[in-house]
Image (cartoon, rainbow, N blue to C red; front, top):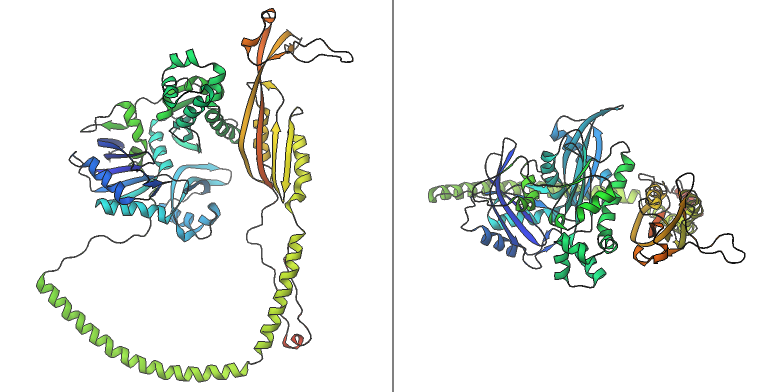
Length: 601
């Protein structure tokens, strides 16, 4: 891509425009502009008010030296589905795209695949015991979503070079920043979302998004400290002020949803790739400036944290006077020019042909002659068709007379079908996915730690909801987190969700350590009939009375998770529908006989 292109990312809060070119694996950014997104003009990636967006873009680039006539859009939306798939290696990319499109219904269950645009990006080629394979990131985006951006290009009088998916844009640029031979966690913490990427060298292993970002941390601190948004932002931007006014416990509560969301993705990676340990964590985005975030990420995830400072392979020149921090906001713009995934839809052709006056007259005469010839041919064909239609009508009337008894067969079929519907409805009413509840409870008894309690369990036709309350345990471990992954892996458990969870903390005094080096906690005097008294606990270490200050103490945590899932095996795709055997004409007079096959088990 030697020529310049405009790379535009339309976000819900801001629109970022960059003029650049990809020159021999080096991206040259020569001009850039950032503007606020017009109010109510974007909804989950859809361009609701294209005119307002186009006017805002025109105003921002007018008279500022932008010259490119082609545009690349980077889009993000919850409506876009992406999935990593493994397929046999195919060298030809055009053939690979045809294979992926032909099997798109297997990757993305949808009612009508014609309503979606499909694209792909090859993540890696590898060889295993089954042979040579490719791991491919497949993407499906609604056609009407993609068409919005074609309409925006038309409004801006620009040609669409390609349309990229946000996840692919960022990964293309990140792959240029990574080091071969190591596995890193790359976190892009934005205002409302955090993108979690696991990179093995320059190859993407896992990509997920967490619905928490900088705003979630700000709102949590406002609730914890009962302060204004302005004060919360001030504290989170200055680590010294934060340490003076926010206790470690308050800070942990402030960032718990963000850190826990990231932690669940990391735990999933560790479960799938047990020998692939994270060697480092790289963070960028607006939320990466949250005071103290590096320390808690390093403590909770067990790897050193580093900020992106300079982007390898990116050169800033010309009128793009951007600081190193500002450049990081243009990651999706920059990544899109490297290797866009190219979501395509059919859209109206642009341009036209202008004819001179003499050419126009000749063209009109030629059209008139052709129309006269066509009319003469049409009259002849109509006469012939009329004769053939009359003969065909007579033939069909005779055939109808020959099969007049078909009405009896049709009535017999209708009666048989109605009987089948009644029987099938009765059979379906006797089945419930709650039949799997006993097995689910038995599996839970085997999987859950002995000190974990199940509360408020409800089950309605396989839709199960309950609450898990862990025992008090060391803050550095969480056995239930491991169990969550195992429960989700049961073959009859579907749509496992954790809508909310909460954590409680307490401080326990350590009286001594036993021979195995394990702590023995201090207890109260036992009451009559008791062999041992209750543990002596406090809300925080600052509550410990002076007479107990000589003792060591440890912080313990109790976690309460709300769960919901569906238990029951999904219907097998491609299972044959029940077959109704129609009665013969002789049977129809004595009553319809039906036979069903492949009924519900």
